[in-house]
Length: 257
Image 1 (cartoon, rainbow, N blue to C red):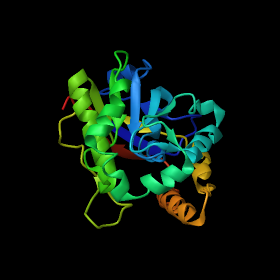
Image 2 (image 1 turned 45 degrees about the vertical axis):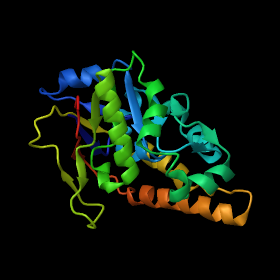
Image 3 (image 1 turned 180 degrees about the vertical axis):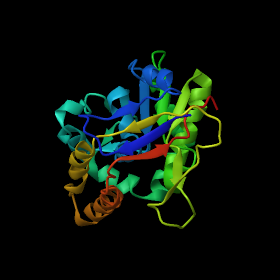
Image 4 (image 1 turned 90 degrees about the vertical axis):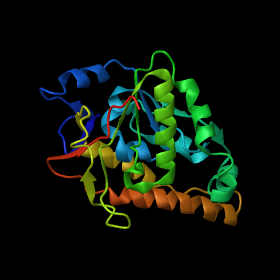
């Protein structure tokens, strides 16, 4: 089990925090064999940023990338080396196809599900990968696709004998304030580590999402496309208050399911 911390930091990049109990666990992450798997294009920024420097790959797993996503990742600061490690597990589709199919729950349901996500992720579980960082069992705030990606990762991790690490907090009450998270890691008896990130760097990446205004080939598709991006931007905007000092968020962490 991992514990991840988010904080205002003077460090130039995200990292993981050592303690007497977690030093060995943190050292292991520096081997370059960590896979970061997330459902939506903003999720690794919101839930997994402390692991960015140690990720071998960033795998977008919840749907295909649109052409707009390609522009997103190319616009991130070069020192992050994000684009060179980013891989959409479903490949990239035309913006019109994304707007028509993947913004519609009914149309995408037969395409994106537990079995197809597992099939798309399987090629990334290569012999050199030793651990996976992904969404937690609760989908952080209950998001269904976060939870499906979590299940897919954990089932593959069992098959390949890998550890799974995830955020150790979730929204405290159904329908409650989605800015109020409770620690569900304490008392579970799993190993824990802390992480933090550079708040200024977070804001720079966040700004790329806030600036996005996607366009499809007609007004109907453009409206669908923009609504999805608006939803993403709203969630990213709500994370704009980066705390001063250390605010520990524990993870659901290491598990061999």
